[in-house]
Image (cartoon, rainbow, N blue to C red):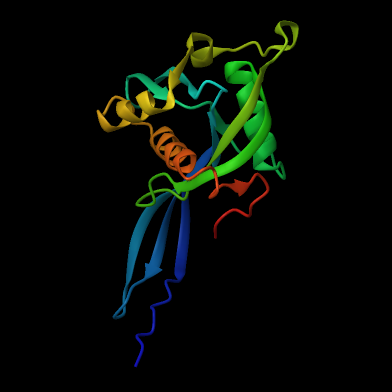
Length: 201
């Protein structure tokens, strides 16, 4: 006899804050065994990130200031999926060009992650970019705000993985992307999904 999974149903929903990138809501949800519970959560537009790997086996990392943490973090080129109907691969290519002045001849999907499902539905798709080329100088994006302060470096992929394991890289999509890239490389890139692979869920 198989157990029947409880179906969680939203009985009521109240928007506490609504902005361009996310909204904060309180939802009353049915619980197993009867009754309901209120859950506060963040509905997020989603994001992409890019592990840009050059022919020498180096990945392109950025160091960017993040106000919630109060310091600079090592990260991947990344951005919001906030353009309605835009293919995530197109978003990824644009962010790669805008943040690190690169184009990619090939994009594949490395990994998808829910960044912190205890409170947000944010989904981040991490791409692998290869066959890199520089954006011509006259076509480069003029970076503003925190992006004007970006530090861009290239680090050997295995060294970057070592930084993850040493706790020097803590950004979730960067951690996941670097570990997935190293594993995919060691498997001869056989596990990669196409850039147009369906999003989970």
